[in-house]
Length: 494
Image (cartoon, rainbow, N blue to C red; front, side, top):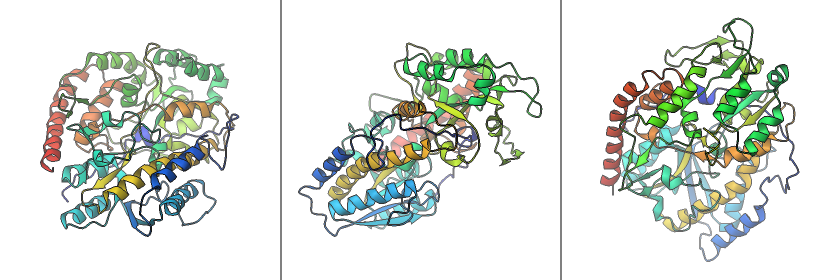
């Protein structure tokens, strides 16, 4: 398969720590479930099985087996490990309720997943019922290869249910057809959400009221201006990376701020085909003018300059630049929820907030799903039993809501930091406000996985707003050319 391999995921999004712990905040829990509708979900799945005849039928689920963030249990039994047990419970229920034989095909990486599915379809085989993997490194290759079918063929999958991302069809359709399904069916759904951390030692040092920030989220006034106002309590740092002092901001992501401000990158024409604006939208330019002065100011912000591709050796290891936040040298840290699981062992006290809104007139908070971690499931064109895949896929999504959601709330909330009962409410906001975008599918895979076009957006918003329009206008032509090629490939494959 002729593919361009996307390198590493943007360091601004995935290498920064997230660590906190919470109490249950009085929520009803049953059997390790934070959601209160577990029994209803079980009854829903049993209703799906009524009238089906899948007893003894093998269901083959193919995709990468990641050591840390797998969509497979470690063993086909309870182990005491929270996430593995959640996946085991889902598998157990699928086998018990439907009578199927669960058959995982575990691959080393996304390349192997793509190769196996493409080769199987080309050979006319029907070994795989459902495939999964990163949208960036698996989904786009399967789509371009013409080997997956539209999820519109599924009649039992109900996109209005809470276990599918709200508005998913608006994010990942081509010619009006949806090819990717994501939500709690994938473990990654709880790893990729953009968020903001604040260091509690820093807030205490400068007299910042932690509860006031949480309250501002609840009353809808957690905005970019409010964040800047709060950060103003921290003096500008002229000591530099090797000196003393504290920064206001650590590793801001312009793309995350673009989405959290209510904007989107990919639009769709009247035929349902994706494209990006030819010219830099004025709203984006205005946003750059708003945030760039603070984020490009090295006395206010410490960040990784990924344009130069520098690697930095620190006491936490290569590229572990989050030490600035861990050591209490930055107030706000812009990251994704993955960090909570990766770096729970560090002794740092902090809270979590959603990305801020642009202003109080914006109706809701928005959390962008990091391009390197947003994953989905896909329907191989040669799958042997559409009714089976249809039913089991809906059941997997529902049981993911019941078990996997609970597991990752548990993992995220059981840190070694000070317990913060308000962070659970913030997680609810973050996970319920996720947004995706197709721009990564028609972008050259370079520069840490963001690609040339998205990097142009990133740099213009955070590093250099003066040249934003000229650089954007050139890269948008390339992106739109790739978008058109994607549409042609998909339509030709029908």
